[in-house]
Image 1 (cartoon, rainbow, N blue to C red):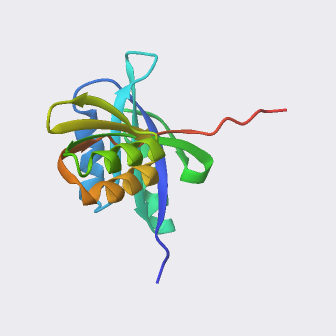
Image 2 (cartoon, rainbow, N blue to C red):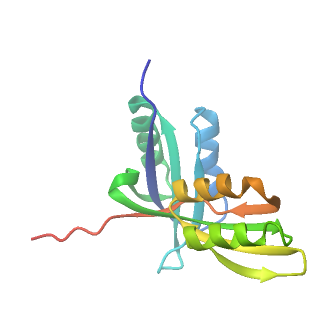
Length: 165
């Protein structure tokens, strides 16, 4: 049995309509899995960066990189792994609270460095910006309270800073 690994693809693409569709179509046609996808402009408004997290065996991950490099709208593909990058994800979670669970929610938020960004008499909205595994842990910790709804961004990542001597 081959070991599944995760790889992060930072793909610079031309910022024009249809590019996201072409790239996601590539993954669909070849049955490649997308664990996470985030797209945004770079400092150059004509260029966007697609951060794609995918998992598979070594051969599959190599094929993804080769296929991405063949796309005409792709300017550059950089790959890296989670240990060699700084990866963050944003979570917004709305929970129902009452006198009996309020302290537990606040303690969990404090422990995980999450913040309350909106509140009503019975609901609060919590924001957490953290590494994807920390976001997963926070969701598990909050499972004991009444989660009303939540939204997550995809992973954003850049390779760690390395000084060139």
